Structures are given as structure tokens and as C-alpha cells.
Figure 1 (cartoon, rainbow, N blue to C red):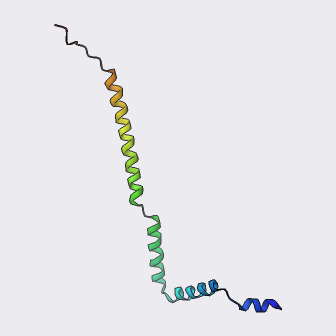
Figure 2: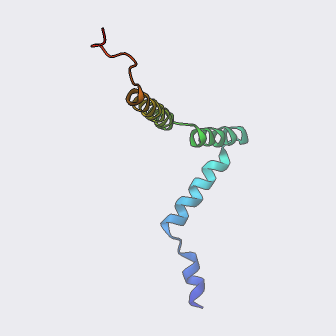
Figure 3: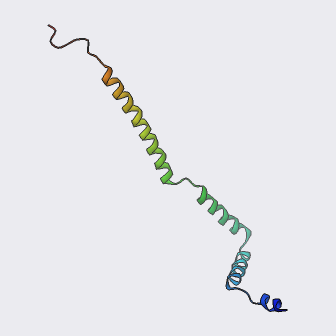
Length: 86
């Protein structure tokens, strides 16, 4: 019969959760829906950091591509005329 006594004692965490639940219940549905939508929008929004990283990666790729062809073409060029030919 000790269980009956143990069930009447509530933990502070449970009391806190119950209080929060009552506060949420007092809010109207449109307010709760708007809050959820705002949280979802914040979660799924693309940040400036991600955009910057993508742009930096594209710039690095373009620079590597340009450097490869610049070095490749600049070493293969052979002049047809020599300056001492007169």
C-alpha cells in the first residue's frame, strides 16, 4: 500500500510541465499555428554562411580551372620567329 503514498508526491518537473501545458492551452489555435510556422521557417531558412560557402567553392573551382588552362597554354606556345633572324 506504499504505492498510494508515492503517487501523490509530484516532482517539480512534472508540476512545471503541467503549468506550461495550461499556459499553452490558454493560447488560441491561430497563435499556436503562427508560432509553429515561424519556428519552421527559421529552421529551414538558408543562412548567409551556407550561401557564402557555396560561392567561395564556386570561385575556387573557377580559379583552379582558369589557372590550369593558363599554365597549360602558356608553356606550349612556341614562337615561330626568332628575334635574331634578319
